[in-house]
Length: 208
Length: 208
Length: 208
View 1 (cartoon, rainbow over the protein chains, first blue to last red):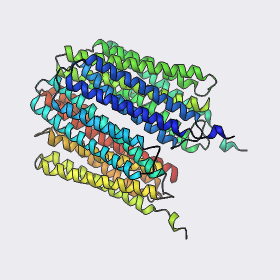
View 2 (spheres, chains in turn purple, cyan, orange; view 1 turned 60 degrees about the vertical axis):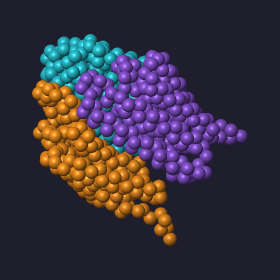
View 3 (cartoon, chains in turn orange, cyan, blue; view 1 turned 60 degrees about the horizontal axis):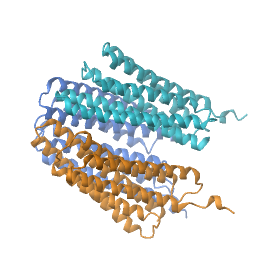
């Protein structure tokens, strides 16, 4: 009888899970890109394809939001979470684009370290998102969010040391500018992961 | 009888239209600035004057918002729309300031291409804003929003290729840094236009 | 009897005051850092310690928000104000980190001028925040907010002239990049102060 008002909970959570799965995939592909710096065009195109799939998911989420009368989470939380997950993916794609367009043929080790931290952070994001439809163990989610915060701090630390090193040792200024930009984008990936963690933290506080 | 509660719809829409008209004016003046790179001081001052007029409009909008009990759109949408339109204008002004202060005497063609895309994007924004007080044809508005998204993608593409070219060909590093910054600001103009399109898209979904 | 529902007003305002006091402290320490460029490590560590104390306050604020049923200001305003105050502190810390990690041994005078404007802006922020629990004199608060806006304009003006001067006179490109980045972070400090002023302005309009 009230069929039209039944919360379509499952579908929102499914969309969030798909979105965070794509992000983990993209981060893995980016790590492989920096590890080998071969097949650059192919890998960058793969990441762009993943990013397009992410765009489709965010549109599906917004559509569902406008069609759903009673939502399983605050409308604003759904919008924010979807949009911040999209940011994570966009910045991974942006870093990949730089590697291709700036014709980066070698990359200091700090770049690979940052890519590794990004992979870890987005895996934690995927785990945290997976818990959203079952808030029975709020402490488990909180622990993951703390871990994401720690990874953001680690990325920030690596970034600062890496840029300091560029200023000391890199005398090809074009390379300095290119590497600095890639590092900063990767650190921003972990910043956006932290934003996601903060939103999830808030949801736990409110609903658990 | 209920005069105090009558929505002052017309005035909000009028303010939005004035704001987007100023933006089109500023983008046109910026395009002329890059096309000729003469009378730089005068043109940059014109753009700054337009930006000040924009500030007055946003203040008038906020004032009206606080005085209006029933608003024709969500209060948050009004605030966001006004603020994002203001961002568009601020970034055009920021780009113009750079041309003056960095004493840019010549500009690669990509700068002019980006300025052209900005003009097209803000014209579409003005058209979309013009439809807001009459949502009878939601598909027409949606089409314009899709077009603004396309222009943002185009600007992004031009930016990336343009910066790659700077890294390849521009050996005056100061020029490289200056041009890269101007390009990035212009691409941000189209990003903010896309934000405006997204807000308008959301309004259409809600009200049409 | 309704004890659980009594607004814990005092505690929110106290937390905001503590937060803005820490910011003033950090800005003062940063000004001293640039004035002498000695004991850099110690001063940067002091600022980092202050930043950590700020993090504790924001967590306390969020905790209190989730435990409080009736809040003395809009929940969204509390969240926004706390978060923007935190941004101000983060950017002061970010500027300090750059001075240490980029091994900056001398700094053009414009850097010190920007640090001075930051000190003035955060002092005004502290004054404005101090008025929040007593909105009897809205004009006094509005006057301070106008003053913060003026200081943001001043910082913007100094920044643009300073970067223009770097492009003219600084031929060590690494230094140019380092100084430009520090200047831009300092100008962002005043931007975030302006965000705080705008939030406070909105609160005054709503509650006074």
